[in-house]
Figure 1: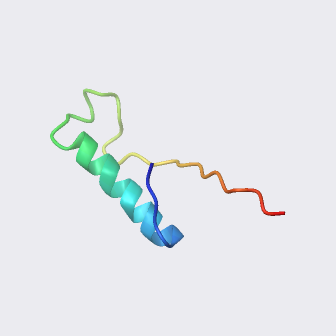
Figure 2: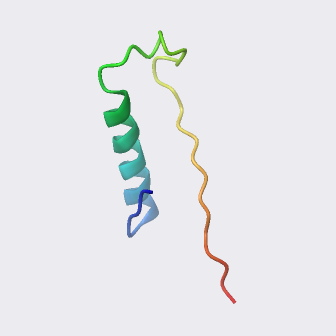
Figure 3: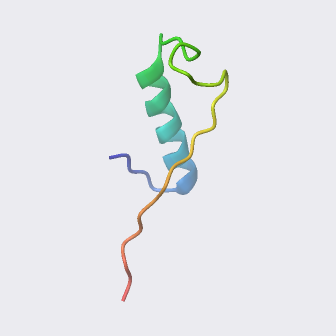
Length: 48
């Protein structure tokens, strides 16, 4: 799970985590585009 105080910081944290995970991998060999788009979903708690 990735947490952050702001949406901008959260997006930055997610990008960093994905970059570190894929570091050294051949993206073309994995079937990714040269600069792939990252799509993330968020789940927010219900507020009564």
